[in-house]
Amino acid sequence: MRSLTPSCVALGLLVLGSCSSTGSRVRLGDVASRFAATEPLRSVRVAFPVGSARVLVAPAGSNEVRVSGEIRVVEERLLEWSVPPRFEEHVVAKIEGGELIVGSAHDGSLANDFSFSLEIEVPAQAALDVEGDLAVGNFAIELPEVGRLDARVSTGNVSARCDALAGPVEATTGVGNVDIAVRSAAPQSGVRLATATGDVTLALPDAAEGSFDLTTSVGSVSAAARYGIDVERNVTSARGRGGVGQSGPTYSLSASVGSVRLR
Image 1 (tube, helix red, strand yellow):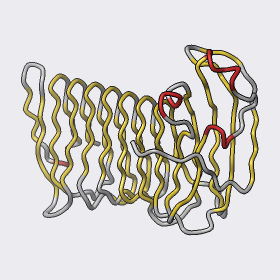
Image 2 (cartoon, one colour):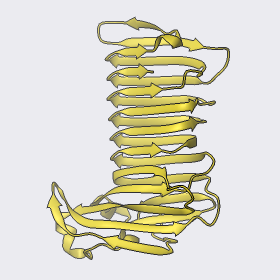
Image 3 (cartoon, one colour):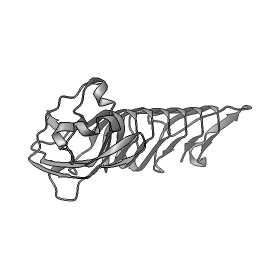
């Protein structure tokens, strides 16, 4: 995971919240920051050890980036921090060279003491490349158009809902589900979706073309009839291979333990 420096280009800041405890971490409070996107965004990168992030489109006509959500901290460290929390003490949110970077402002072992649950709103525009790198948590993308998608989660789910996904696409998790749905324009570059323990689901528009390889060591494989995929089943494993059309990318969907579905 690349380190993120604790700087922020926020032009306006709103901080809300109170403290109440739940689970192994206690609630430090809610934070929010918004700032103008003074240059067109090319990409979004999200990285922190513990927590969840949801990337979505801002309201129509908005030229602002908004990052908001909840912060939790291990109970032993609660009294070390201001309540309500100050955004810039805990969250990095900045634009560098057309890339929006969001992550933890804490380094080293301190970073593992915090968890984040953030919503990241970005202005509506042409396809954005999206990168997510989370150790524990869920990563969700809800954008009209996505270019390259690179999402890596050790424990948690990866999901994407978009009208167009150009690719290439790499979405993986160790323990959790990978669920990608594309409504209108299918990927034009290679797609790899994988989990060690969990389910993999991919839904594509009717016109999608490409070659498909679906595998699971323990579980099931299923595909819509239009893909022309032959599924071979063993006692515990299953594999489906096939293709549609004369062109299109290669799709690789795999689960070590779990179900693989192509819709």
